[in-house]
Amino acid sequence: MSGGKPRRGWGGLLDAWAALVLLYLFLPIFVIVLYSFNRPEGRFNFVWKSFSLDAWRHPFAYPQLVDALLLSLKVAAVATVVAAVFGTMIALALCRYRFRGSGAVGLLLVLPLTTPEVVLGSSLLSLFLAVNAAMGFTTIVIAHVMFSVSYVALTVRARLRGFDWALEEAALDLGATPWRAFTRVTLPLIAPGIVAAAMLCFALSLDDFIVTLFNSGSAVTYPLYVYGARRAAFPPQIDVLATTILVMSLGLLGGTVRWQRRRARAAPANP
Amino acid sequence: MLWLAVFFIVPILALARTSIAGGGGAPWWDGYARAFTGYGGFLIRSFRFALLATLIALLLGYPLAYVMAFRSGMGRLKHVLLGLVILPFFTTFLVRTFAWKTILNDAGPVVGLLGWLHLLPAEGRLLNTSWAVIGGLTYNFLPFMILPIYVSLERIDRRLVEAAQDLYSGPRRAFRKVVLPLSLPGVFAGSLLTFIPAAGDFINAELLGGPNQSMIGTVIQNQFLQVHDYPLAAALSFVLMAILSIGVIVYARVVGTEQLA
Image (cartoon, rainbow over all chains, first blue to last red; front, top):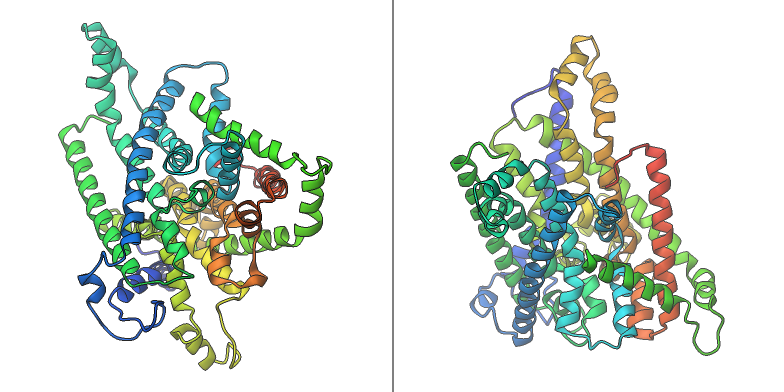
């Protein structure tokens, strides 16, 4: 590695330590990919037997697993769109206006991130029980929007910190309507922040277990199915789908990074 | 704005109301009384596990963040390392925890290796022990420790380090006097982001531990969803939140950082 420190011994030790920590982070992922090729004995895919492509050939062999995954994708899509719109609005309001209680709102944004998920989940459940709401798709979406909004608002607000409001004023001076000035000038400039936050929300929603467990009623999302699988059966198809999600997200991430780089190159003046 | 008010404040109020609902003619503090008398042990265990997980994560994460920030050069390698750290987020949390179940299996390689090294008694196992749960907690929240530390290290002006060395401080002294204090906000944020979810988590305890490793989250979840003892469960939730908030404030005072996570 470059930038070596004068004392090589210490540096080498540090690098080795870092490599070990990375290995620790990766071990389970190797296991997931490896065990998607396992032909397990019995219903639980926890012990290695022999190499097989069966699970990859029939990835949708468990209809309940497929339904659960589809439900999760639906929830994540709706929750992400709602959270992106609300979060962006909150961030814009916080940056543009100083109003009474804007400090309190700033604190409110951080609170859901620093509250354990059990507390978030159980307090939402208390609310839903109090108003006698029917648990299911809607309550899951509401719960997911609740924790996602904070991420969007904080990410977009960070992006807006370096924003030059004179640009929007210039558009207004040049005769643009406020809406047009927003869609043509402000929105494109903060779009990368919104996209990044939306991707994070989607991933969080798809992955969320604890909050969902409290508010799902009888609906089964993908993590809930996996959780239930610890009792009934843990087929290798779970590993197959997990690997597929991993590869697809990597592709998506790579695509977004490339898109942002191209934007950055196209408009080098932007912060 | 309203959204947050409605979907954060109101649920908390609903939780508070449920916790003092009593039920069956019991006094309002009944839930809290039972929470403290019957479940104090679970609370203490949760905080002990979370604290250990946070310390181990700090021990593992700080050097990695340091290498990423200072030793990986300016080019590709840094981005690759950053990508590698967030990569685990792209596989489901639960599936990863199940993978640990596979790794720590009684017939698995880790138990075999430790047995061979005589670090583990012949009939010893890793699953259903406290160490499995703490290891799982550490693993799951490690990226939350690494990323804030990395960000705070990355922000440090390299010239400060060079200045310290020009003024004849050794590398170790430069680290202690310059780099470490400047990275403390990251350590602070990372520790909170690790400790808070770890204290409330019940998945690791449930999947990697046995009945003796149940954490407070397990109890809350059970009381809410299986036993339907809402006042008790809500009281436990509230106590957990209150203790964490107090802890965060005290911690902020001690570390002396103004910026919250």
